[in-house]
Amino acid sequence: MKKMAMAMKPIQKIEQDKLNAKYRIRKTQTVNGQEREITHYIYFVKVLGNWKIAQY
Image (tube, rainbow, N blue to C red; front, side):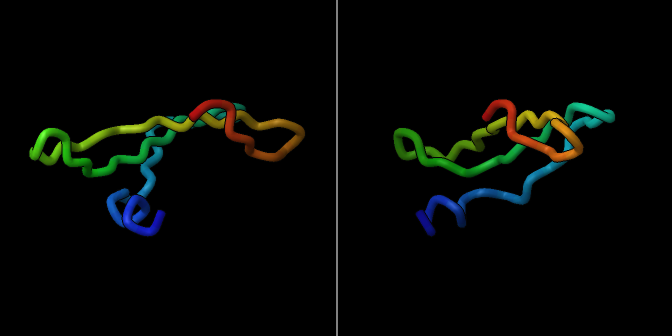
């Protein structure tokens, strides 16, 4: 888990409005001996004043 977390770069905000937000996390992964950067998107929704993860 620690090795996986160390491969991740800081989370970056892509866009946000009053009720929705989109962020991304990039990480370096070795595939077939080559390093590649993989991007994961995280979508948040505001529910009763609190931000919740809607999709990862």
